[in-house]
Length: 199
Image 1: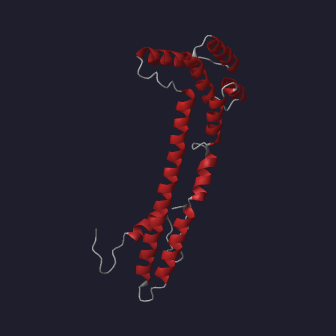
Image 2: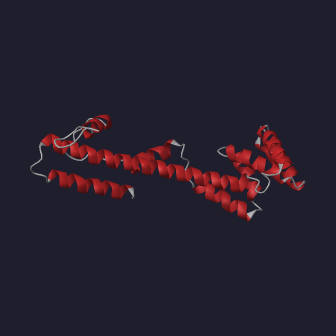
Image 3: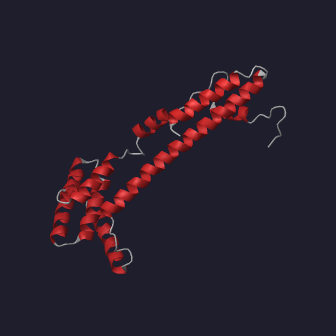
């Protein structure tokens, strides 16, 4: 369900609870707390699933752009890849990285070129490093498309993303619950009502 559908479902449940005329106030509050906690937890799960989906998609695109498909079973290729990653990690400036990448591509060293592009991606908040990455994909339409797809994904570690998700998956307590915190709402929801058996 979407966040709006979860919130609407809570509104419907809350309205039904308020319409139970023979129910004592503390029992109504307990049922409202249970409905609220259920909706809140569903929204929290949906938020986590969305974030995990974005992160999985990013990893998939990174493997497609910077990975070495078909080389994983070749021990020498795995060693070459590790060595290339180590060498790329020692590149301190974007100019140095650009020269090394151009040299690798001229020599047909795909593993090294990809390692340098991956290093540039890690530092791409710096425009000069972003330029190295852009140079890597400029004559590679498939890689450029993959990079563009990566850039369309939100940064799940950013404060902006966290705040947007908090707003999108927020749910207000239903009228009549009057809990001062989520901890209190949890406590109210766990109360045993007449006719119920304690868990």
